[in-house]
Length: 248
Image 1 (tube, rainbow, N blue to C red):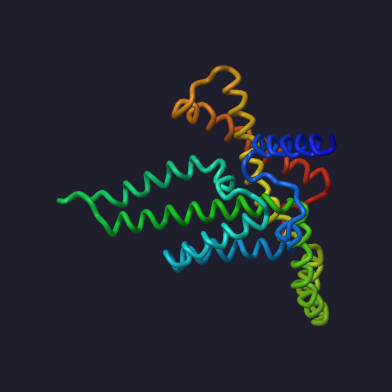
Image 2 (cartoon, rainbow, N blue to C red):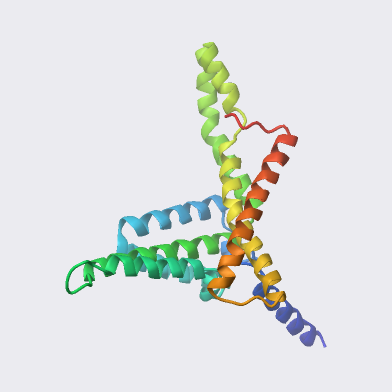
């Protein structure tokens, strides 16, 4: 009986993950989940930087690294690509535009190669971001960024106060309360929020027997854009109501 309940629980968990929007957190206790959020964010920055600097070799190495990380986090690699359809469409357009030339033979192998590399870089960056948000919550990222900012700013604030000059003292007062970490975490938070809004709109559109394809994208794009603008405005109002200032 316990075995049946356990199997039913795993099936329910898989169904819940299947319904979850892209870039959403997946609870777990793996080594990657327990890793420091700052280290995971630095790894994301390193991957997205290296793939555009060193092209093919960094692209291949990053792909292998992400596969290993997905295995450690117990996430199927292809699940990191959920929601990548717009990126794939843009990648195809990039490859076509880079391959076409205005003279015979009307095709550029070097341009096609450059387009494929750029498209591969975009897919790797998308997958790396998906993996980060799958094993890290936004509160963990925010707290990690704020701790790092305090660690960096504390010596600077001390030096500014030791100078004794009013202009440096005012600058030290402004730097005592970290804001950069909060701003960066707020920006990163809009990525999973976008996919959540998109999935909600797509589900509502499908429930009303909406047709798939380009027509669906044309209908959903303005709705999602409008909702994202409303979300940004609501976030700004919530920050102002809590005494947050837009001046740094």
